[in-house]
Image (cartoon, rainbow, N blue to C red; front, side, top):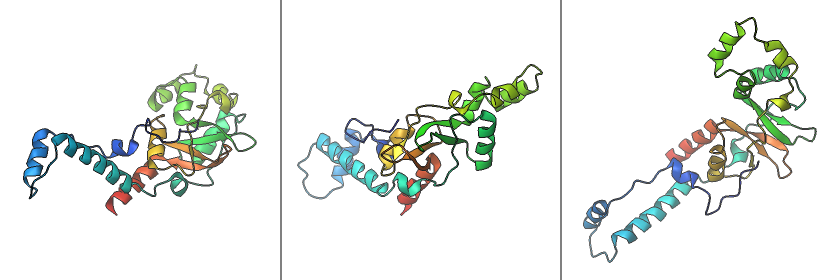
Length: 209
């Protein structure tokens, strides 16, 4: 599921990351008293100017942040018919918490995450899973060796295009709780993997520059 192109109806993710401070009339009047000369402006006008100035400044802070620049390339991929036991080894070796699932044409068909394993194994968390594994009745081998990735993966995956900028990226991240998401080409083929922490780290760098 590709995130929609930003428009006026899309929540302004930039402003969510850089929240405005609500100004009272007293705040505005006090500020105006510190400006020399006569100001023919109402408090509502002042508030409107502040809103647009804040939006412009927030957009300036994240200018240049796009998925293409931040995505990690050459990430391992999983196949829909791959047994979960094999997929688990690939994810563990990658050092990531999740990986994209692609078809024969490299099109993204889903994401397989650690949480997907927990759900499949009917465990609320890893401690719960450990306790279940200590039970003789827990059929861990059967569930992971005979279950294909397609039966456990999260699908459809939330994705973004390579030219997606900060606002669109954050809007897409707000659609799911995962730590990363695939970056895809126009035809849906995988281009890379974008991590939430990399986006926020880039925003912090931009903010300090």
